[in-house]
Image 1: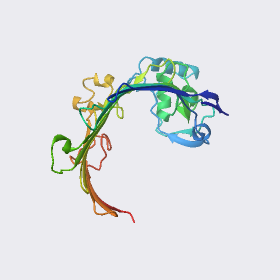
Image 2 (image 1 turned 90 degrees about the vertical axis):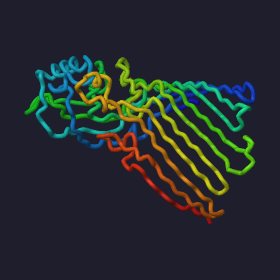
Image 3 (image 1 turned 180 degrees about the horizontal axis):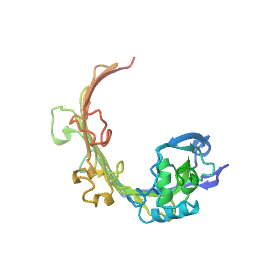
Length: 358
């Protein structure tokens, strides 16, 4: 497919796939593709609007050597303040919010992604009703379009190698009561360098008929479904030449995610048990965890999510269905200092309902 955009010119995308059934029980499959996403109207042309943000200045004397900044922050802050003839050390004595502008970026280019997958599907004849599949995926997204908060723009300006696109989005005062203070910023969308991810998708479906096991009495039918993901890599690189930022194991990027459903169908009754899980994630980075006195080790990680849900349904007739259930029946709670991670603050939740069709 060839596309031509008035703002960014032409681009191509394509896909090639192979599916090979070795026999009735084993199928191999794979794809290789180049995908393209052009920036949308909002990302390109959103009208500039006034905004405000409270910014913690990375060049402040209290921050210039702090956190995970590495060696770039000190050198970049020194150069930036020399350019405006303001001496270091610098202390931001103002507590007022900084005025900025939020808007689109008409100079955006399309995102491009190179992806490949390879997998196998098994339907063994000696286990009737079973399907098992494993697929490996690898995705590299270039020129990814992303909007950044004011704080992120400021941090990246001084923590990434120079020159970079972030420093052009902020200004500092050269005169006044607090010379050197950030007095303006522009929040806009940018084409960042690279997003990479890889991992494994695993699925198992098993429809169980007790008659196949010699049970003559009707006790209903059972269904088992398991869908899992094993994340091997999730890395974000803002600007070409910057140090890659591995996100694997951070909140919302757990190594393992699993959804399990077990269903029993008996006549007009259906009972379903659902289990949702993802593995523990980092509350603090490895740099901060290395500081023995930073926080009690029991708070280094967010706990795993493990919620259990139950639902029962009764088909009264061809018109009405009555259902009810309980979500998170073990009442897992959010982590300390976080109101909705790894679960929502609602805790255990009951519900009942009726659906009718006339």
